[in-house]
Image (cartoon, rainbow, N blue to C red):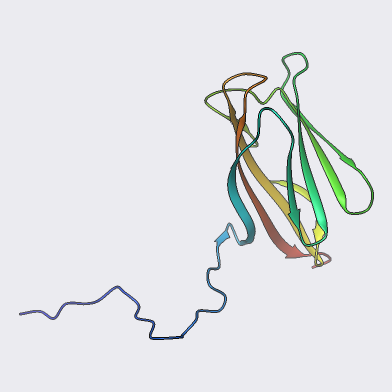
Length: 134
């Protein structure tokens, strides 16, 4: 009889895995990822270290677009226009936001909503790419 191979990992009392989980996609390190239901149709804020990213949901016309603006040195506002589709609206590839810890910072996200004034379901992923200047 052929011996069975195990595909599990046994961690005994008190042992830890450091880091607990490391996720990569296309060579980019995922540093934050999640799914959030907004309260009503309000904005969404995500803070990473001292930096704040604000998704400002705007209903105006029919064109879907994203505009970026700074609010001080540590806050980036993403004006997200007309992302209110029940089958989802988002970026097709992650967008480069700038740099964090001397590495390129990217964001990918999808927004689902039943109407302009309903709560939003937002899936987001922040990623770090190559070191700047390499």
